Image 1 (cartoon, rainbow, N blue to C red):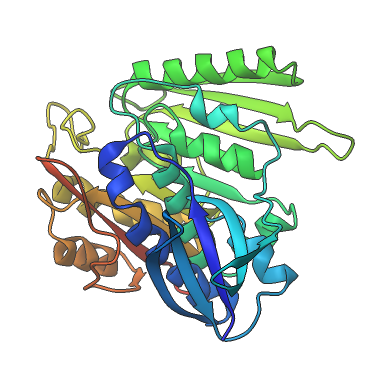
Image 2: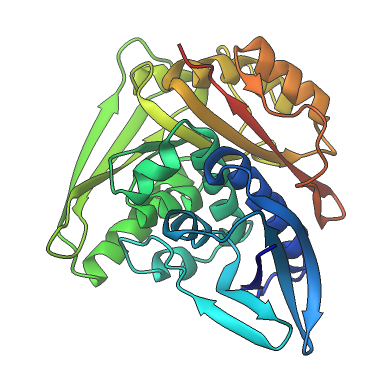
Length: 346
């Protein structure tokens, strides 16, 4: 049986780093189920010559198509085909990147989601959305939504992959901070771009703002890509986006209370279940049939079974209501999990 040794990236986040091998194995198995065709056998952490690898056994050698997918694993640093314990043959594993990688790494702020974990969420959404991973690798247009985008970590990953990104957030400071970061980065890289701004007031208690950044990806075959930033309550997403206009959704649900939804004047729903009960049907409506939504959240404030039930009630098919593969500790107050839900095809 062929097997491969995956050397994972060094991780500066100690807590996330401790979970990296388990998360990488879970990510690979999820991608295998949807994209690779079920060729992955055992995945286990092994020390070889004093270096830890994720050793993966496969039913058959990975062809170029599968290697192109595996090359985009969120924690992969290098990939080797193992001929015996003393002979590692390097395999080319080129991650897709249409922009410079520092788009992900130079932005720093308190509470930023680890960019490798954000990468994992986007990969899971691509894998579970019908044909999306292959379309992304082929450079076809895809549109990703983060309905609680904060300062845009998920939108950066979408841009690096060559996808259009849409982010919605209720915090004007976060939206403005990300817009400033993105525009400064594009100017520093001398990437041609334009900015359009719009304000929505009619029939509203609070004003909504939209910033649309259109840029040309570098290189001879460059194409126009878009990042849309919306400052508004996520429950009003349909005011800005058409139904069935989103190819995939990835969201690290907020852990605090500042993102509480406002279902009416003077009301603020702070609990995650309260927000999701109202927001999931809205997000479901935005997704194309067959598109996936991937959520990361704190299991200490919302049980997995309750989130799964809310998603099913909104119309989603949940991949697994009981799954411990992605559970990991962030700090004393946060135990993070991941749930994959799909809008059923027509």
